[in-house]
Length: 533
Length: 64
Image (cartoon, rainbow over all chains, first blue to last red; front, side):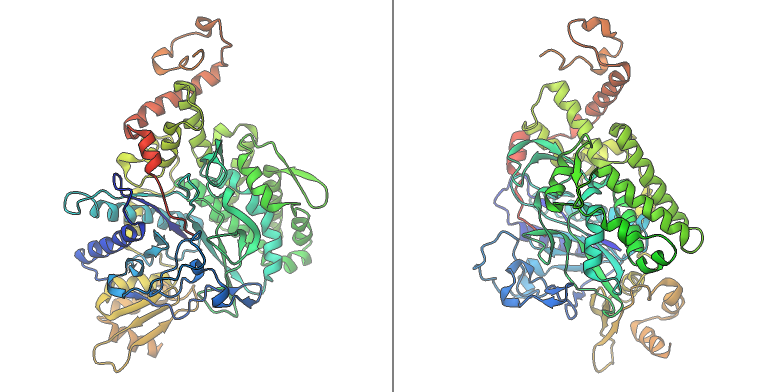
């Protein structure tokens, strides 16, 4: 699993600044910082296997029929942001001076680049939610370092980055989750059975938003940043008509074995418990969906139980749940019943718990921890949401905003209320409401700063990100390009570039290659040894 | 405005009786308000002094 986060980018005092240029500067500045520290991550991104128009429902969108914002696999023709007019022909830029081609492959296995008009940190692949939190927070520190270095007197400007998803004026930018899923699970089944879960998980995963409606025209507060931008149940697009379940079928792995579930409806979370629960519970649901037949054989009819949760209007309920801050709204089910969002979540947790009970022994410690925290948060949200103010981001944000409104007599549409919402996610500690709450002990953290500092530089050890990150750290001069599932080496003396495919996300780990990397003084020795294995 | 600044850290020692003209919150709620007020004091110097200008200037391009 992994998380991609597009950060909001701002040049305070310079509203005319070009966001694509600013985003490019974030990336190139960080690349220069890394180079100063010894690495030389100049490698380009290898787009060979990118296929953003492949649809998981089994067809291809024709390139000519695609919205220009979906053509993300050609660095010479940067994909414009979503609401751009359809007839705006993309400008072909030279790689050298094209900010949108700015790319940096980090020694922690992540990718830092410009997506549309935002700097994006795509975390390295991890195997569990705690690691997902760790490398996600590492991304916040990467963005902080980049914005610091790109600001100040030498640069002649200030550059601020925000880990949020809305500007309050109609624009939204994404935080996408990716999960490796067994391809044997039919996509239609996956989409059907996970949708009620995704619609309702915002009760613990929302990061809170001031303003209702895509442009925030209506005063008020809602749970989720992204809810008002979800317009379809299932679909390929990510920048317009955004779906609950995205169908982009670009597995970045062996296609016959896996698909990559690409979820675009989630919020950027600063609260680590929110990221942890979001990734942890979603992967538990997927674990059940991958085992429907096995479970039916063992007496747990998960397929029937989860299909019974089908919502009458999933897209409408995304908005409704997000506005239901008292957690009392009854969602209409397709079979005529009605349930609250918390009850839908409880049902998923019940099914998962029984599934774990009948299949193969005791669950691992992290699974037990995710389930325990999930149950606990759902119970406390039902009793009194304020009891979750240390873990659930929207609850904490709302508590603070309601306090400010009460103390100072402010309406929901007062600029100070909006400003607090935006400054919540500023990556600079001296400007971040979130960081100040952490310093006051008002937020539960799951990872410590030493571990985060380590994760900024080093990859997870149990996925192919280990190989990607380690070769970037060890042989930066000899890596010319890399992608999620490949690294291309240029070895002195070799007649051609050598591409190492990494189609199995669970190979290329430290257990698999650590000793070999230790023994290989350069990429030539590494490749020779790999050929021998 | 009645009730707006009833509970602030300086007033923590007030009893509900001091505000006989408005319904007093339950003690637990009072304690919570005091906690939130303390947090608001903590974040005060982080917040932009010109909120209106800051909010107006926060304009982003759409993304994914």
